[in-house]
Image 1 (cartoon, rainbow, N blue to C red):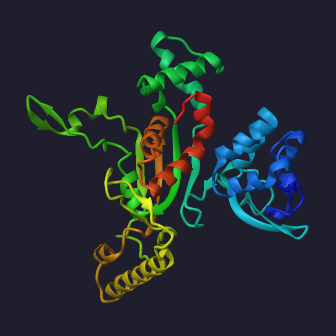
Image 2: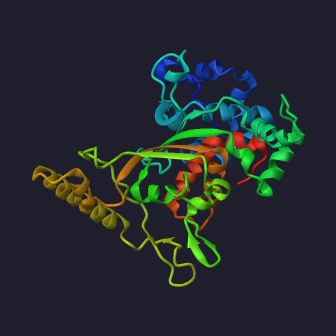
Image 3: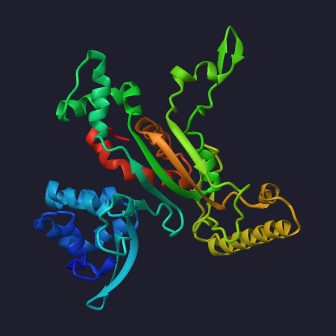
Length: 359
């Protein structure tokens, strides 16, 4: 692989160079050199959202300094940008800020992941609690023994791991995150299960089915979540986005009926994509036509397909996030919700690492 220098001195957001942005984040000077040897590979991984593979390269190249640099870059709020240098085009990710470094935290661009690499769907971390989540886990667990700690250490990390691995999940429900998500409607209908009172479980007492509310105070493991979504009753979808797969999948002839595999290259993916786009445009026309004829939005929306993009705010505890990731990162999860889960995981990865939780 040809050796290239990082385009640290190319103009970035707010007419600042990437080097200046790094300096503002108090990154060690030595860390700026860690990527030079494998810039093409690292940038390709960053572009494709493979943060952990890129992180492994950095750790191998520079140990803790490389890891520090990677996480600092990841926290900038990335968008894909293209710049040319020396006759060569680089594709890399920079902060989406367009002015000097914000002085007010409310003005800062939240970390955002392009989950489908289509420039439409995303997962963004818009709010989080200030206290160290890992320290809060061990302190809430130790309150049973009337003890507290001020600093998190290696023993605490082992305790966090033990608690999670053995199902002692209540200490993980004291830390909360708020995510802003944009994904196809059918993905949200799967993700919607991971919120208050939606464990989708049934219980019996003496052979008779009872309401979930009888048990949810103590046994609902999905507690501590809130979900608010764009409403088609109030919003007119004048120019919505639709999720169209680049590569279409088919169900295997045997085995897991829920599984899907990429269809072979001789399948006309482009023609199928074009056909689906036309179907979406036709459905949108029918929707608008009904509105024009006086049909209510809540009725007219029924004709819109499930691949329409929508947005939601999801506030959830650390345990709720971990439960979601534990189920939706599995290989048999549908690709589209697995991509959303990967985006969410990337946004909280530092907290998971600190707590010693492996998902």
